[in-house]
Image 1 (cartoon, rainbow, N blue to C red):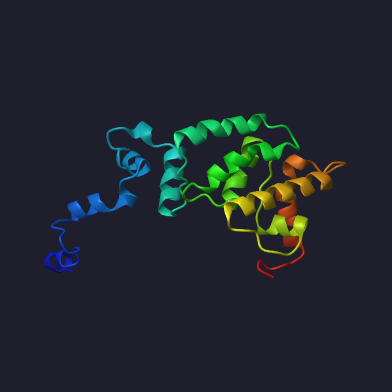
Image 2: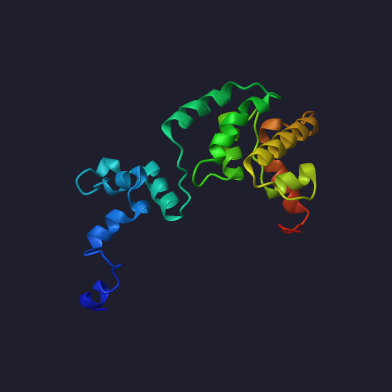
Length: 183
């Protein structure tokens, strides 16, 4: 392609590719600014696994946008006692309100902050514990479903089945049945 042909692809009213790039919000986020400023040629110490993972998550459009206040508040979930998971409802709903954070991601975040109180919920785990049925998509209903899942999971664990690792084992149980997701 010739440059003159490429220039014809510019949206109406946009005079240059630099101007166009500046107007695309996906490229104006704090993450994008951080990645653009890595400058590895001059600052090789900026190359870290964290930087690599940020690049991958950005490219996959899976980078969660969690603000600093919520990030700090999530540390409080570590203090929620086992069986008192409903105390985390407000945090859970705030997570669900974040871009690129769905139910499975929100529950995984809480699980790794406090595995004695929270566990990951996904289609496989939900099916094993609560049976067939769709996981609700509306945040309030999803929260109720999640906390019911945790209530039931707490009843199932113990005596050689550690609550802290239940999510990964339930996933394996469902896979072992050969059940296809969505069936």
